[in-house]
Amino acid sequence: MSDTAADSDRKRYDAFISYSHTADSKTAERLQYALQRLAKPWYRLRGMRVFRDETDLSVAPEGWPSIRKALDGSRFFLLLASKGAAASDWVSKEVDYWLESRSANELFIILTDGEVLWDNERSDFDWERTTALPKDLAGKFDSEPFWVDLRWAQTQPNLTLRNPKFLKAMAKLAAPVRGLEVDKLVNDDHRHHRRAVQLAYSVGVVLIMLLSIALWQFQARQATAERERDQRVLSAVARTYQMLYLSPLQAVDEAYGALEVKRTPEGEEALRSAMAVARHRRENYAEEAQLSGAGAGYLMERWREGEVFTKLRRDGRYLIVASERGRDGPDPPGTVYLVSLDNLRTTRLLPGDDARGRRLEYMGFSTSGREVFVARQFYLDIFDLDGNLKSSVQLEYHAKPTHLIAGMFGSWILFGDTVGHVMLADTLTSTRQPLDGGRHGDATLFIEGDRSGTLAIVVFESGRADLVVLNDIGTPLQFPLKTEAVIFAAFSHAAGSNRFLTATESGVVDVWEIVGDEPTEVCSFTHGSTRIGIAAFSEDESRVITLNDDDSFQLWDIGINALVANMP
Image 1 (cartoon, rainbow, N blue to C red):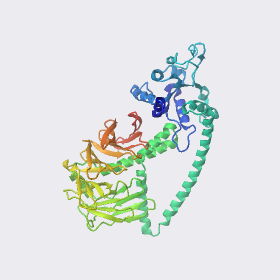
Image 2: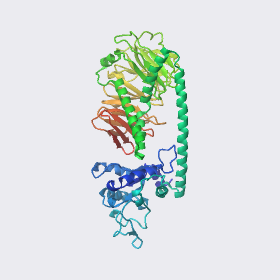
Image 3: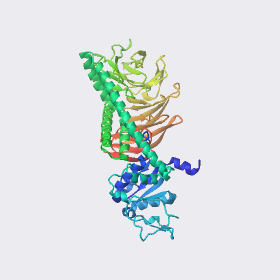
Image 4: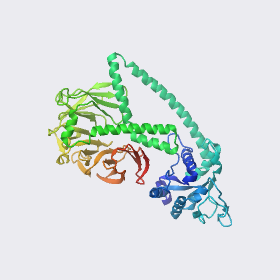
């Protein structure tokens, strides 16, 4: 592959739209939407990646570094030529920056207002009659450049790809960018549009059938009045937590992406719904963490409160529900139920002989999701998803009860307690493999594991965070990531990914990746003084989405290390 081809493959955007916000804001929005939708298969988000800033740089000059990075990451430059663009300092600035290092042949002109006239004798524009171009383009072309006349579109109410004249203009503009013939793009667009309509109809029919079957199955379970009451309660809990689970921050990212293409009532409602679910998820994490306390004694008191609580598996298919426990002891000890959300089958998880009668301290799923952990006063019971007790293991006798169980790594489990011990315990033997947590003496707040089952992040009440690497159980590695203020951590769940993030009380998100066996910081985003509630990677791992305690959402682009959207 040539250097030029390799450089093209690395570009983040196919095209960069330069325009006057005063004169061409609506046209630029319609142009971006059309180019991204043109000849797009139903299973892809967009046919082209087109950059269009939505900020008036005349009042936000600090946005220029982000614009410059977007220009560097674009293959072609689309200039919306108009009298307003000719008079715009920012359009001139973008044109000058492009021409400093790029060919003028990669700059296309879309005329929306005014005049553009070429003088063949001078091999330049006729600047006495050209009113729509900045003078920075004088002498930059050897022959008449590629351009499209869209002046007629200013009075068109139906400026979409279903307008044949507009479709033809967009295909003419997209053809050199996508390396295809104009007629092929037009034909492909018609074909993909027909398939999308057919698919939407088919999916609608299937969903109606599935909903009907689900309703019938649910009603069939209402055998007795008692069971009906229990089912209503469990169904309400299942519906609530199922909504909380469904990757709400990724849903915010996807909904925002839809609004980037075109702002519609349906898209806005989807974004509002995703935001509401994400805010519920943040509250759920906050309730589990209880960061306002101080020391292990506080955490002990929290567990003594004995309220009903739940845990949802990562894929949303299983739910653990615990009944109330005695405030000052194991009276009652607390009952644990495993609920399959596929069929609402409910199984009571009976404790092992040693754990029977002891007060419930913790319950959760392993990192793989195939095991259920139930800890009762230094004894850990491990169940499969059918509710069968697989094994019981006695954990260490420390001054405070075990607080968190992370996951299984072969026959080993990783656990932490309320006085800062982090250990590996073999469920088949009495072997214990201590790590470095105990020397700090502060409580383990939570442990987050990755998909591979070899990495875990341990967050302590003091705000420090450690990475545990378990490639070799015999020699576990523990690396300090941060020493204070960390309140949240999450791994990317993209296949083969080795990235994770930490978020702090002071509004900082750090993105990390594993190099060898050690963590290396990739980039850092700073929201400000507002605490980060929860954060997640986008599905393609290109962005980080954060939800903050002021209820605002941010989208951060990892590639350009910049804020790309702020949603209050």
